Image 1 (spheres, one colour):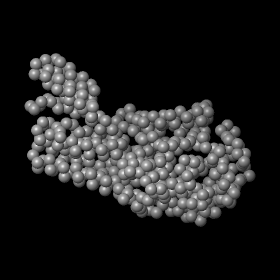
Image 2 (image 1 turned 60 degrees about the vertical axis):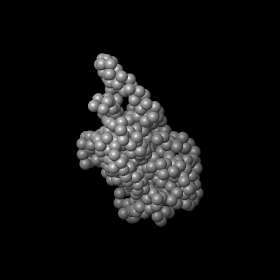
Image 3 (image 1 turned 45 degrees about the vertical axis):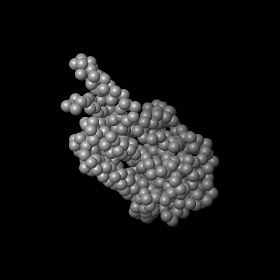
Length: 464
């Protein structure tokens, strides 16, 4: 049974879905007004790993990740650049889609964007007004009545009276209560707008996700995810407006990933310490970022510096090295094979047990490194490729569950066969002492990322 930490209840709970075998997963995506940064990468990687494991355990995951392409930040940036806001956001959406491909993120089932669902948002807001949960201000803004919701603050664990102290004084004149939040914003000069029953304007930030959730997944979902910086006010407001509109519990489980930290500080534009995904990928293998996420708890802050990146890179190399072929053509002793077989069973059970416990990727990764050590030891003790294969197959299986692409590089199936054929030809060439041809084959394989090692028993190879 999979157990996951629920931010709403503040404890781990058994995963019980609304529909047997189906997980409805909604994850808040980026507001597209600039290049996506490694903090965005952390969040999408966390939920990509969650999704992959749920699918490995047999669930059909309906995964929705939205794009906020209508927002104050987008409008301000577009005005600075002299561009149409939707044209600006379209470019950054395309860039982020490529980032997702580069990071090996499984495509979401749906990727809605705000600009495409304005009619649904208007219907949603009208429904809240009709139920008495929302009201129109004199200037054409529409606000949600927080006093109408007795549970407001339940996700963040805050009381309304405590939150009021931090409200914006300058807009209080338009509101019945300082903590009321905008569902619709009246248009200002130079801003994009849509027609509505309340005049020209655009949606507020929070209503967007509720409307996209409803449109793509229905009135209730299983898991809502995002960074823990979204707990309040964004996710709190989503709960309030969604449950007010439908009269039903919104999300069964709330999952929040920790923030990425550079040199002990939260990454932010105000501190000027932003690292874009493009910049990171120009210097590191995409799997290094994935390994950083796997090495820790998804709920904890992620330290991001050169030291931890180097360590992640070395971890990748250790796993790759375990996937190289055997050195021996003969079987090792039954004792060696029995040792390896026992570790295969321990790794299989340990990996699943760790991942079932709130997606404990660090614990699961630890079981893989136990398997790596066992494979390397068995190889050194003379295990044949036939004896190594079950352990290497399991290692490949679980690295795929994690979304690591090293199994594509280490070869399996047809690629192995062609490489083995080339080495067989090279062996015959070496017997004829055609050293130039032998070196040519070795060097050309090296260019393709394949290292050939010659030893007393012949030649072996592995992917770099």
